[in-house]
Amino acid sequence: MDEQREMKVKNPWHRPVIILIIVLIAIGIVVMVATAIIQNKPLHQKYKYGIVLDAGSSHTSVFIYEWPAEKENNTGMVRQKHACDVKGKGISSYSGNPAGAGSSLTDCMAEAQKIIPVHRHQETPVYLGATAGMRLLRMEDSSLSDQVLDAVERSLQTYPFDYQGARIITGQEEGAFGWITVNYLSDNFRKASGTIGALDLGGASTQITFVSKENSENPENSMDFRLYGNPYHLYTHSFLCYGKDQVLKLALAKKLQSLEMQEDVLKDACFHHGYKANKTLSSVFNTPCVSEKLADSPKSFIHWGTGDGVECQNAVRKVFNHSCCQYSTCSFNGVYQPPVEGHFGAFSAFYFVMNFLNLTNDDLETAKAKLINYCSTPWEEIKSSYPSVKEKYLAEYCFSGTYILTLLEDGYNFTSTTFKNIEFIKKIADSDAGWTLGYMLNLTNMIPAEAPDTPPLPHGGFVSLMLVLSLLIFSLVIVGYKCFRRPVVYSSAPKDIV
Ligand SMILES: O=P(O)(O)OP(=O)(O)OP(=O)(O)OC[C@H]1O[C@@H](n2cnc3c(O)ncnc32)[C@H](O)[C@@H]1O
Ligand SMILES: [Ca+2]
Image (cartoon, rainbow, N blue to C red; front, side, top):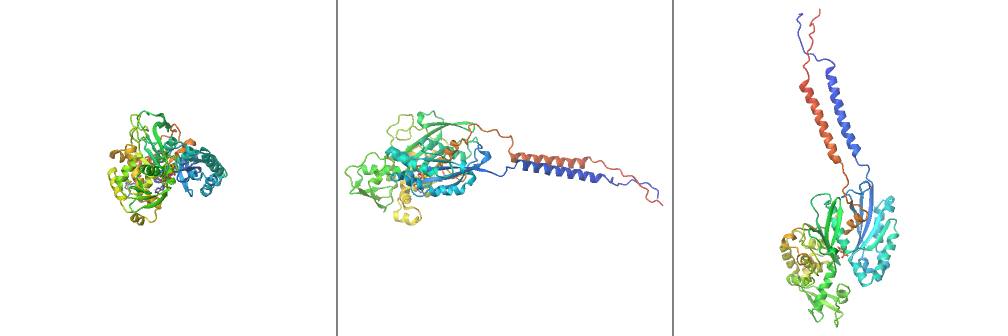
């Protein structure tokens, strides 16, 4: 039949061209996104290091910090790589053998040499900061404290690092750098969420630091910082002798002085019933924190626990003097302190003790009640319940817990309500809470006063946006093709050619 009929036969070149275009667009998108990712991918990370020795009253710790070499001024970049506890007591205990203070550091410094890559040794700064133990030794005999510092300096200079000095830091520095550490690790300087206060309880001193709206009534308690574009007005105070070891001596001395001692026996409500230890008077009075010495007294006494939490609270209150305050408000001993504001991180012995006593999540009233119960537990029962805990710590938890709650409530004026704002912490983001990180950040200028300019979008956001837009374009092309392609008219072909 010659009948001409229209039938649909696709143009032979049409479909391949469309497929080719779609494939090219897809390849283009993949190449574009891959290039964006590769282009912005950080090169192989190179790290820098810093070492800070915390020469505390009870012991020395060596902290190694690490940060990406290219991002020195980005806050939140420095992290703790390693911590090493020096064997033995704090450097102030080497006053009779200063050279021993230097050699005590060798094991931890050898560890640091192994951990930090050799090619970074020369540029790695080393700082030693000594705290309340050395402040007390300097008060007793400044030439002895100089000798101890000289000995640790000589020891640290023998290592291939960049030695930057060993010194006794001030109480204000200790408080302020502890505050910088906890807020840096919590990333509070970049966030607009505000900062947290810092509570540090050592063996020989304790520090309280927080941002206060009040105008400081005593310049000695105020410190101003400009960090990452924001000004901070800090209240800070360090109470020498109010660390947990020294305050125990203070409390014992008060009892010994108030003639609570009968026939060489000192009955103590802050120690468990059944606790009995022979102690020398000099172990109590061998510190400048205890001013009045005992006259006509025996050389030793029996420390006899009675385990009465309520009586212990009354005894501990006596170490705080509330009788004199020449400012509008004081904490204790005539020290100016505005009312506490905001949230707090409490670390060092605040954490060790509250964590052991399982009081870190309790409100003030519950914590007090649980502590009274704990204090009344007989010593033998305590010892058998915690066979692996150091006996000295174990014997003192009742006293230390009572001291902590009394310091916070009667000393710093936390109430049942504001007590809930205290978080007991050991570490933040795997780094120890303490003054050392803040000290290093400050000395290396690693927290800039002004926030550095950053691109409007972070790298991840930029790549995601590219991907989403590309997929959108791709989908539009497909949809456009489907909607707007013209129906193709096929030419009729003679069906049969005979
Ligand atoms: O800040 P200074 O006053 O110089 O002292 P420090 O730096 O040596 O003090 P630490 O925070 O290291 O420790 C505070 C106290 O807690 C004690 N301590 C450490 N670990 C403890 C634990 O697990 N349980 C109870 N007490 C502990 C330690 O002996 C100190 O008396
Ligand atoms: Ca300390």
